[in-house]
Image 1 (tube, rainbow, N blue to C red):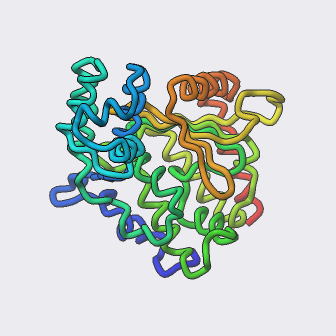
Image 2: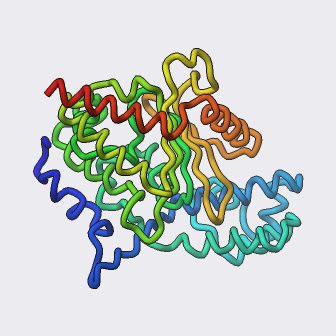
Length: 312
């Protein structure tokens, strides 16, 4: 691998929660992120106010603040005090259980940011996603070109990021470390439940060369044996499906409403409105239905492993 840490030691250094603590027990995987929590709380505040058809100025007056402050609270640009959140949501007529859920999120927003050591190599527009991904309990990803970041090996990620126009060579190793640190599929107290569908072409694209691809696909086979990972391939023979407009991700949370995430070359869209998220969820369901079965996917990966081995 083209960085300063050997592949064998990579997870030990970057993701110590994978290696277990005293007595063989895994270390608790804390993914606190105040900016991501403020993002979720702000959306709940804005959505509840708009549903109640209350003007921002009237809501601000109700808690004795300026409309500007309330605007910052709703955008997640400033920390929302739990007591003010509770007062506003009661004013909007929100149900008690939903008030408690959002107030709990607001109370957690004063913790540290887990990804701070990697902040200098994460684009500003991507930091919000990294924080939200760390808080998510479930993630669905449709990938049309390369394998999802959650399943990538260090060598695969190095080859993939090494030719990026957005990553200086001096930041490559740290960028790969950041990608590995995001992974939450194994050896953690709170593993991410991942559902992914990738285009068949992603298995054939020789990122890093035959050896890297063989090892990557072997790693993928190991992951899809886990109960928290569902992985399918959509064959090229499927001419039309709802993923054709491009890759997307859906994040679901235990204490907040889900979001859809669509990335483009220089930024991303964070979609939170219920009709938009529902549309992406429906697309995900239809893509799953057109994808190969888990057994067929497993066989397709094994075939590629043999093919890449023959190329070495």
